[in-house]
Image (cartoon, rainbow, N blue to C red; front, side, top):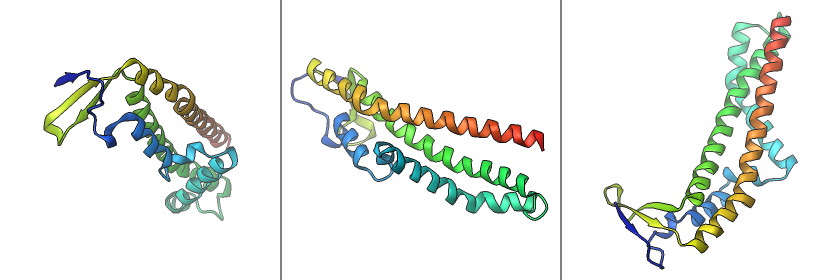
Length: 166
């Protein structure tokens, strides 16, 4: 790998971390974390509800709704949380990848393919700008996702306790 530290940025536009951040922020799926509280929760409830398409029949096969309505609800709701966890994980991985690219002092990039990777040392002013973006734009998204994971873990714990009581 060749290390270049010239003033003009040799990194192709689509591989520059700040442009990757802009693309992620504007993407339909990844923009969910930038929505207001109600919009964000609406998206998550939507994913959870659609996850019932898979979780509901599995829960019904194990615990028929007519005989065990509470167990059916707990198992179906918990199973539907798996779909939500997968979506939240994808959101977290996307935002953390861009955070790491912005926070790093060097940018790895490919000029024309996987076989010619290069690194570029960011100048101090670009590094400072990128780290400000991380601190004020990306870290709040990651903190929101961590809080959401904590709430999901709490829901799973409460569901498990209710299951034990039944």
